[in-house]
Image 1: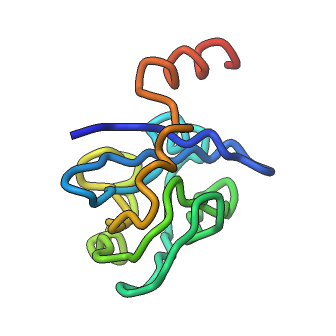
Image 2: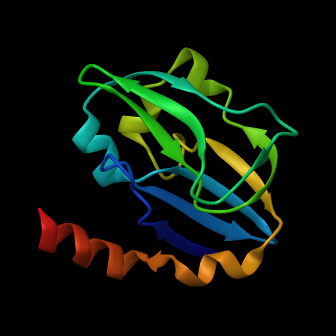
Length: 130
């Protein structure tokens, strides 16, 4: 299993992660991103079967502070979404990497992950900028 972080953030500080196992990426927002957002009150996710593209919006996270677009770190077909977030969006805050994941994507371009940061590089970036 490989965990990577996307740094593509055109207008906001919403960072996404992807954990890859057997060609399927589990995508969500990072712990740093959820802490910047504050209490998440709503999550809008794509439909299963939809196609997502790297650096393109796949959903929206609304918090008590703001609504923010969420960008996909990879391209492919959505094979699952976290339906628990409809009733309990706060899982994004309490467990972003485990229970608060947003979607699972069957990767169409595995080489896209080459440009993503690993966890230690991402942590160093967050510490340097904030």
